Length: 320
Image (cartoon, rainbow, N blue to C red; front, top):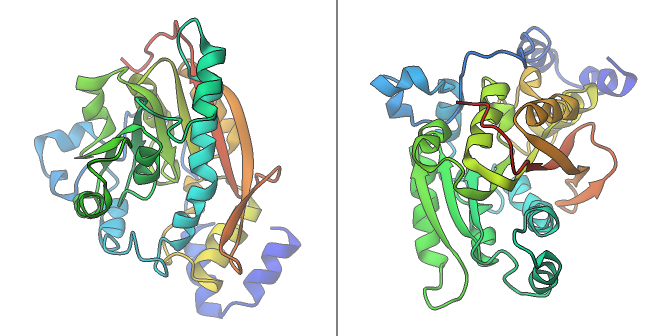
């Protein structure tokens, strides 16, 4: 452990240090190359259903986030840092699609039109995986996208639907949102290759099998389409920042939100994407300032980072 992390730990009470050690260093790092076809998204009520055996749901994650379903739009609540992240992730998604996801012979003119439009994502079909209460789905729809938000927590989907009904403008030229309670592997059975963009923002660190998860993302992305991930690196810095500081010192998120062993390095994520026909085109780090409550782009990716990748036009569906 480096000096910074050691110094932070020493300032914590003994009981807190013990809790962190039990949660982090005594927990095994997940096997990023497992192929037991586990995926994270389903409802708590589906755990005992016949479909549960095929959906690899993390019951603890579902239960944990279900208890916070009324906090999604609380500006001073548990998701305030995630709300602030929209300032980075919305333009990152839009820029990635406009730069790499356009189709047809006149891509340069399309690109210019979209870059100068108030609705740069008009008529683009976006899947927001792990949409929660709709924090990201809504601003994407306001840019013109047709958004499908899917989540494993039924309570969060209800929150998302209710909030969108209260804020959407039916006479506007903005896009719309369809919210689904279920799993991405279930969705892939009926809508494989249906989406121009598949977004997995602050999700992959909560899944039980990253390899299978990315395979399902590939199934849902059309050839030539774009997938965007934002997640947390697995480093000493992320342990100090995303767990010790965020959960114990600053209390930006509840204790137990993150598990260091489930974080994924950029190299691992890029390998999973490459194995499923994607090529990474954009990536950068992100830093959060808790004093001014703002995120900034950074070359430093040891804690939070973004990745955008394009699926090959002739990519074989390796998840079937």
